[in-house]
Image 1 (spheres, rainbow, N blue to C red):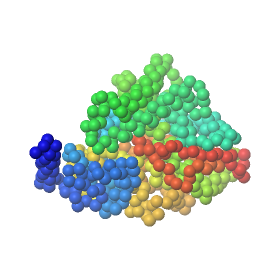
Image 2: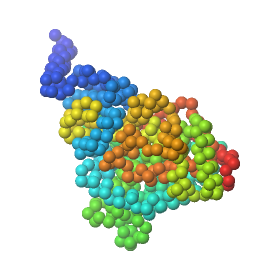
Image 3: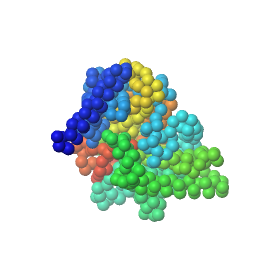
Image 4: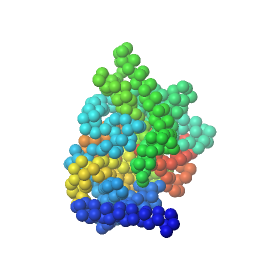
Length: 513
């Protein structure tokens, strides 16, 4: 027998032994059998890896289809190295993991370790007491009336002095504008002012701050995308090897994270120095700086978490919203009619400030934004880890240490939740007698739910309604590619691949101006 044949025989023997071991482990040690599950096809030895490899480039769509055809909209999967997981779009399960048995479903060590280089131990990447302290501190600040007023005032100033001029210039010159990039710059300026009292001037400026901000945003997006890619490794040891050797995507991630940390460190250093001078105006970061026990590294993690929350989520939501309404003139018309009714009633002109009460009256606009986020949630999946084994409300077994995923993107497309028209963009589903109605956060976990529900929810709605109303009443806009749904980039948030190129025209309107 030649060497090749001997090696092949040895390989077959090894694979056979491994298969027998997995068979014994899976079927004899009371671990639930997966072959009968409707959903992911779990192969002997390989688990769900073959299907994952075929569909990794369309992970959200693939898992949505698997969940749609599962009887309880829940599916179980496994892969080698004793790795099991559950992915669900069932509201009963979501309520159980996010609220009823919250303590059993932390982020978990694996999730935290994969994002640790980028997010450190910020509020989105921490559990237990560390998370609780950050949550309590931020919650106090978010619940102050002064902060809400500051948010609205700052958004209005940014819209008038930066956003509208940029759009007007594009309209005058006939430029094709990437509205996603514009919204990300706007949101970045806004969150820096709100959270750190720093004006970057990234939108519509050419100063040093804008250059620094642009460089930072590119590094931040690179870090977010590459950090997300870590979750999609078929062979996890490969990630450790690449990280140890600092090659390929891990080398790029290291470079991007260095730039992000440098930016955040500069903010921290500046604020710690200004603390000695007792500057008057407080911001979110000030609450954490007040505690002398918080290290600069810990403060840096908080800064990065604030930017992720304030920049990426609102810009993602509005980008998809503008694409959706650009393909539906009738919905734009209904929004305009609502704005006109408010203008007539209050006697205000286009360009005047919208107050909190007027924003609250924009029921149809809010319905449109919520409907957009139902179909394209800014954070499409939420990953947890189980501490103890138990049975989900729908009867699914969850073992110790299993990955448990709430698939928010899929939940917006479940007929069992939203009816046969679940794939349609239909703002009216959010209205009752013309008034916006809230939905259960466990059917609509776009802002998360339970103890970890989004603290900035109200702030985000104020921002998005202010921006959308100001843009829609002033400009007509057409997406360059509006006949086909854009692809998206799998990052920590749902960004539109290649941006959203649009053409802008000043709207001819009968509204008072």
